[in-house]
Amino acid sequence: MLCHQLAAFTILSLALIKLHLVVVSSQSVAASCDTEFTQVGDKCVLHESNAQNWFEAYRNCRSKGARLLTLDNDSQLEQINNWLNEYRSDVWTSGNNLSNKGAYYWQSTGKLASYLPWSTGQPQAANGDCLLLLADHSLLVLDYRLAVENCSTLAPYICEQEPRAFETRVCLKPTAFDTAQVVVN
Image (cartoon, one colour):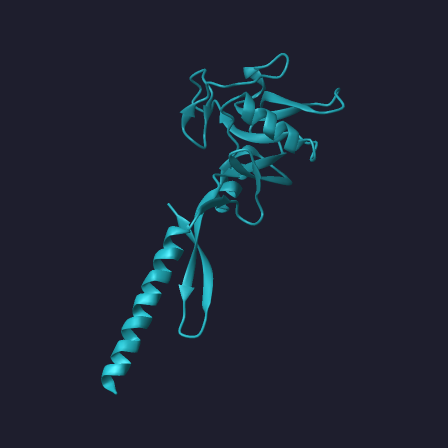
């Protein structure tokens, strides 16, 4: 009798190993945003309409595990422009000249801001040290460009995160199975 039970256990174990190999080989990596964020291009973004000064906006984004918006190229600006037209508001970015060295940096990354799509007549360094994404309200579809503003000015802001990569895995239980999404680093 013990021999039959051992044989059944061995067959069941081999079947489960085969199932595990099929599940592991069929896993796919996907990316998504946290619940309150929206994927826009390669970023997860969140429009915060409660007006804050630049420092409060920066802190509030950090408290959400995010950072203030950075812009790296025309493609990102176009995607943000299209999405931001729904809100029709000027917003803080992470750009600033708080070091007073004459150059603008993205606070969120610490990198020199080499892409600076200025609004007409900008930059006006006398206006302040922080960069606002300013809407041209003379157009039917708003065109957002950067403008220098006093950091204590109250404005809405955009928080950003990178999409989180995850795998879907099957979890085997004695009587059933479940699926789980596991974050991939």
